[in-house]
Length: 246
Image (cartoon, rainbow, N blue to C red; front, side, top):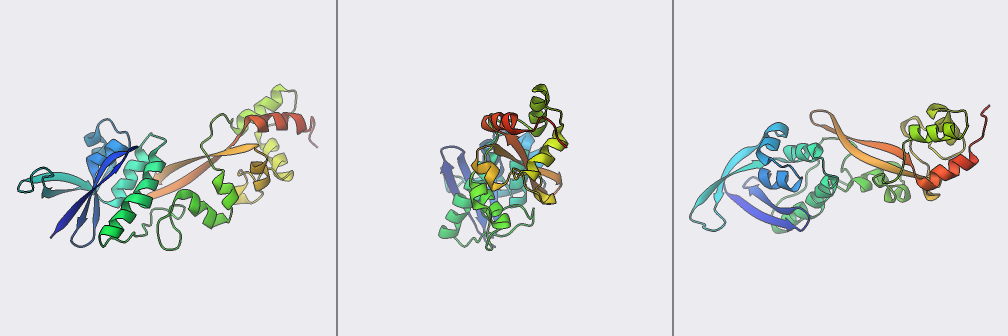
């Protein structure tokens, strides 16, 4: 079986070598991926997170007459390393792989992006993988909302917001506070999104949404969203929240 190895370089993630086999299968150099995702011990990380890695013999980059044994990972194991990474840039690495690296293979070779069934929440739009924010925009038709999603930096949790209100002499708890926010149109009312800010709440700069990925079971990757209250939101709710709720 013929194989073709290509090298992709990004200033953030370094070098990632990709092997395209004769049948069109795409494999990623395990050590390159683990290193890009910040694993200190790449061999241990691959052993701990990956299941279907394979060894391949490829031409030595400095001497085509010599052969070199390398360890490669399929897409499923690529996802497992991304999920296991502690770096905030792991999502950016995923985006680079699917927005830059794989399309580059598609231009130079015969590879076509597949639609892995890892999660209904991840990377599905018009028959190809897309960035996570594009997937959110497709699912809920909230492009304005998705464009404002960010990792919480300076915001506080809803529980902490309720405690701030209590410290100010307002008798409430997290559940009652959030129910009031839904009634006032700050948070969505639907059961699936009852903790997510409305477009109004986001436009006012009262909230930010912290995103993270987690794997509840092997082969399933889900998106977790945690609503946090910005400094502006904290001041706003301390000012407008009623002293007594009916």
